[in-house]
Amino acid sequence: MIAALLRVRLCFAVAAAAMVGWLLCPGTSWAIALPLSIGTLLLAMAGTMLNQVQERHSDARMLRTRNRPLPAGQLLPRTVLIAAAIACGLGLALLTICDKRSALAGVAALICYNGLYTPLKRHTALALLPGACCGSLAPALGWLAGGGQISDHRLVLLSGLLLLWQLPHFWLFALRHQVDLQEAGLFPDLSLQPTGPLLGLIFLWTFALSVANLLLATLNMLPEWLAVLLCLAVWIGPLKHWRSLQRPIAAPATIAP
Image 1 (cartoon, rainbow, N blue to C red):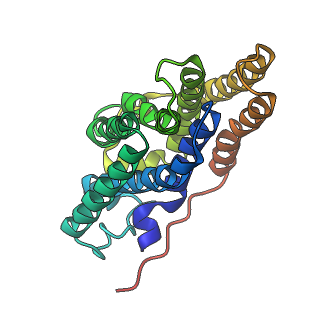
Image 2: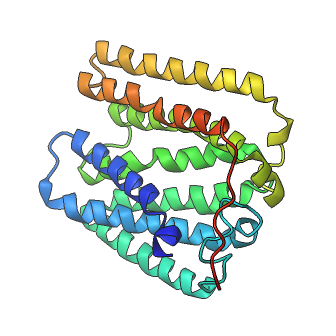
């Protein structure tokens, strides 16, 4: 139940992205590694808990999410809100210890995720844009905590690549769960998009993004090891979701009362 509420794998991925930003920042201090990682993790958990409170009614309509703690009636919204507030407060306090700008970037990420992306999902697929912006801010938390500048081209590059990667990843995920999303009333204009051309765009986009990573290494804008790693990583999500499109969706097991 706790793992489903906190979406642990997603939150650890956000914390890992923040740590990558911190490691790439020149002259970083190892003293902030622990508060940065824990603070980012807590902030990500606060965001996902608040998101599940906001979406508990639509979650109840989807096979993929109907057994989450809130729609399943295992937890009360008030309890989750209190936990989210505590996690948010502790996370921001730890990020402030690292650098006040890092905490402000964390607040901006929450605004994008819970203030823009989550409510806009009920109206348009363009909600993806603030959602992708939220994900791309994760490296900025680490970069700023390490003393870097927000305008540095290396941070802009890293966050920009992360933002662009999320677009095909989301499109394939949405295609996989299109029926679920329609039942919940999310992304109402998604069904207007023809699947074939969209799949072609996704793989063309991913190929261009992987080539761009390698080109940036040749221009000494990214370390070679990071460029190769990113080149491989951009294909993980699309290939995973493309394979899932070939399989029927199984209904989750019903939780016994």
